[in-house]
Image (tube, rainbow, N blue to C red; front, side, top):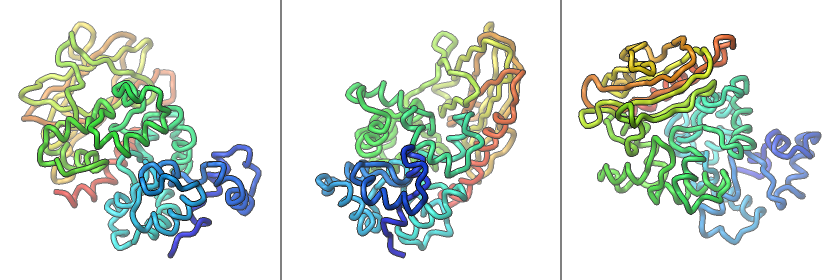
Length: 389
């Protein structure tokens, strides 16, 4: 099925992104878009960003919005061009085995028509489950609403959505980007920053990853993120300089609240201890979610004097594509300063640590729901991992 302007246009998104048009029905919305909205540069789809399309294809630099959209519909999607920092049709095909034979136009139509509502994975950066997990106020939204929220509100608000890209971190660690908006930052990262080896989050530094893994020299762009997420983490490769503190005196402070904070880190013979600190100003339930890749680690919660309050070996994500053991634990804590200490039990390994805290008087159902989203995210990816090992 060939693409047309009418089947890439999303009337619901158009109304949500343009509040002055909220009263229009679908036919009126499409008519307004074709007559006015396209030339005005209005957002019309959570899957398409014409500014990104222009910036990522140098031969399209001089096209206006109408010409861009016509090119995208008639040529760009079929040619496999990038049209959004958050959508990759190649990723969508690779992560959904029933779509392997689909061409790019069929993939786009499937994603728009059913893939979003089914919660399918179409990006190495954005996933529905992780966006919910990082943002406790969004747990009741449907997948379509989540994607709309991210595109309309979340990017502008600098919401956390990925372990591999953080708006504030990217801006702070790249002085030439200080005045960039969040939309510009994400576009810069995808089009040029990752290939330039820029630091994009505490957990991922493309330059470090390539420099310390010469066999990845040929990888470009977001494929570096995908390599680490799908194989490098299991192989014990480090994706960034050590983020955690290695002693009490060099401990890494983590924000703590109802939204999950997460880090991906590495411990081993040359880095035997990782320390994180968090402070609670009222009695709270700490929810800690942790697993390591292929080898076990020891996770301990310590009080301000170094006494061990909790000690366990959390689940291991094995190369046989299974999470073995418990990943989460709830701990009741009084106000004060606390530490998480991670140490290896058998060789070098990466680990994934999530923390959140809620007051004892609050309802923990949303917290539990978001933890379930994390587990669901990894369980859903297991079939894709199995194609790698």
